[in-house]
Length: 359
Image 1 (cartoon, rainbow, N blue to C red):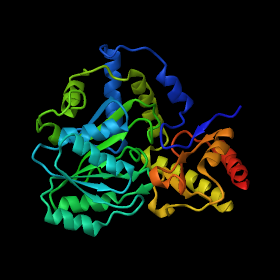
Image 2: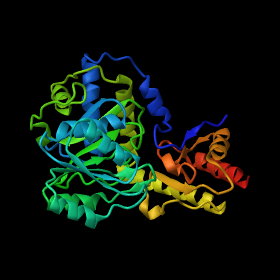
Image 3: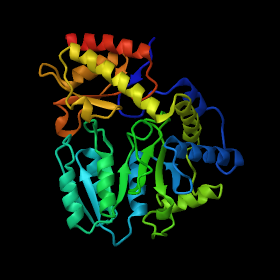
């Protein structure tokens, strides 16, 4: 029987090597074997984008991508600092919700879901406001839009503003300018473009921010606490040991396959094959491919079909797709090409597309 392939934006379909690694052994998190593993994972995460370990810390902690987003903001914005949040989808709105929950002074620039961020409006706001930091989503999986990270980094640098990035759905497959002086922190997760299992959140943060000794806003999510203990060969709380085992294997696979540029190329090739197969059935992209991430594309729902029927048709044939969120649920669906997806899987998917949309 053919395997089920996940075409949702995380968790992803695992390689056999990563799946085996996740349950390969039992480790106590206070023993040197785990602490060696933890250090290897931290070094591997820094190595994905060749980050200078003297300037950057990679801080893994147990949780989902949302935990990484929350730990990033709660641990790096000082009490008196003001934050500008860019919102053009669910996850930009989530960044603002996190700021509000933690009592961070924040303003937002809001756009329709899927709309491009207006650089001129950001420039005007940064020039007129007293902002210390800007928070944005890189790949907004609500629609698949890849927001203009380089442009926002340049604007932040021009106005002396720190850039805080939700890279949860882009880290490991899209270009992220860690060498840019404005980029100060990036939230990520193991179970998307890195192809690990769920349960391990990651924040890459400049050491200068960790050294600022901000008052902790959380017992569990304080990045300075985690980083300090990890640097001493320890861990403040019980970590998801199996997720570390899996991520260690996944990072080795990523490196062997050519790193994030090769993964970007593979995702793009897969996405284009999917787009071509859907185009043959008259299904058009909801957002232009040039504006989309390599990891996920959104497609318009044919007026003669509803999402449940399309979803169930794919599921019966071994593929899990994703609905549009909120008010977009009747308008579009999403297909991600993250994960261990083979050419054989893509051939099966082309057949499934032909059958589902033939109806």
